[in-house]
Each structure stands twice: as C-alpha cells, then as structure tokens.
Length: 192
Image 1 (spheres, rainbow, N blue to C red):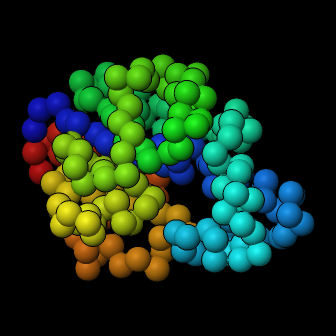
Image 2 (spheres, one colour):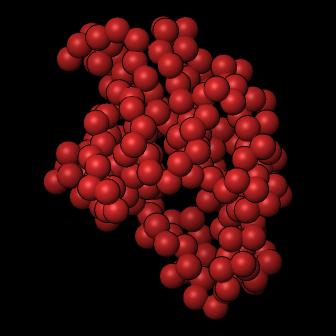
C-alpha cells in the first residue's frame, strides 16, 4: 500500500489532557479522584455535584494546554511516519475556544503540524483516511445520527474510560502505545 492517511485524535491520544483535567478538578473542588477511576466517557457521572460550567471550565480554557505533555513516543513516531511519506491529520472535537492554543501546542511539540493538518468535527465517521486512532469508542462506531460507518481501520487507544468497551466484537483493534500503532502502520505499508 502506498502513502497512508493517518487520522489521530488530539486529546488523550497525542496529549495527556484528562490527567490534567482530573488534577485541576480535584484541586479546585477538593475531590480526590484518580485517572484510573474515570471508567466511562461521561466525566459528569464521576463529578455529580458539579455544574457543566464547573466540570468543563478547565478544558474549555487555555489553562491546561501549556501544561500538557505529548504521549510517549508520539513525537518520534509521527515524525517517522511523515518521513515515510504518510499524511497525518489531527481529527478532533476539541472546544473552539481553545483550538488556537492547542494548535500552538501541537506546533511546539510536533514539528510537522500546521493548520492544514487539522480537522474539527464531532462526526469523525465522515472523514476519509486509512486509520483512525481515538480514545472515544463512539468515534470508531457508525454515527448514531446518520448511520454512516467509518471506512478506516479503527484503533481504540486504551484508556480507563474505554476499557469496558468490547473492541473485538466491534471490529476494532485496541492499542496501548504508539509503538503498537506503528506496527499496524508497517503492516499496512506492506499491504498486509
């Protein structure tokens, strides 16, 4: 197979946003949840006493962005993919209020990144590519509203909030690291 189009989610695939979000909520609201305690996508069920404004305030603003770190091996491996001729697109449903700060963060850590590599959408199933790596299992399934099925290889980036999701039954591959993702990319490069 020739050059691939690799679709990567931003938050919690390329960065550690949720770890910082949980820490910020714990500090601000005197809670003591741990990263591993967040076992479902909907964060509000773990913070039932917070309003939506209180819950989402840390991730809507820019406060956490500059404290985020790239996920292990992601900088090196994505750079290698670019050198091997692949197109990398960031496909995210992040808040429009902080997308400029997140784009600057991406430029700082991923030297291949430009705004031309960025797609903002809540309907990732509509985006064409060869692979999507996402921590939100719902993004790897057919869209509930339109019924549109993803046409790419679906890789679920393992996180506490998606571990109860049965990837195998849904034709999705669970991955735990960028090294694992790279092995899949290498197989696709060979046409396997």
